[in-house]
Image (cartoon, rainbow, N blue to C red):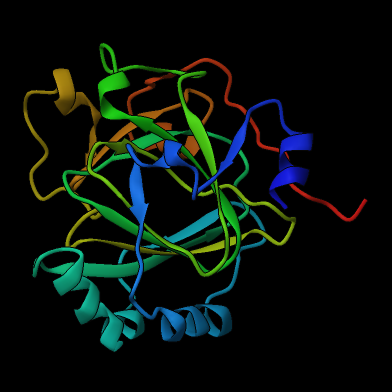
Length: 225
């Protein structure tokens, strides 16, 4: 799969097992996500277009794996388990949180990643990112310093991704900051700082800062042609 993706794209796509992933995160081992993956496969559809994001799903959060992740990955902090399913194939922008994010690949997908220290004057310049292939069944922890957004599909069928975060993340702000300068200009939702590509209309309509500079690159995926 990864060889086919690299043949189609003009950016290098690395396996998540590559040492280059280490500054961004780690593969989570020793936790059985099979029940959560089975629920996702059977009960959560991929939309016909775009993405759907659910911050917290009651069924996922009721599974024993929720408590295991809360204790072993998040050190006992309250967490939420939701999902992102969709057909995205473009960069669109970046977000970051003040805390780790765990992604469990229900299907194969790609992640476009950067570092918060690459942000200059609230802007990230396309060309400084790295792209990684995450195979189905793999769980990764992305550190708080890792810029990311929606996964990108590797087939026309789209992707399914379990998303685990500190509780309350990606929910509406109870009290938006009055000072909208500096990093505050990027704060879009609770524990969610966003740099949007100007062409990403849904984010721009929400008031995201147009901080991704350059081409809104589209990653080519594998077709049956």
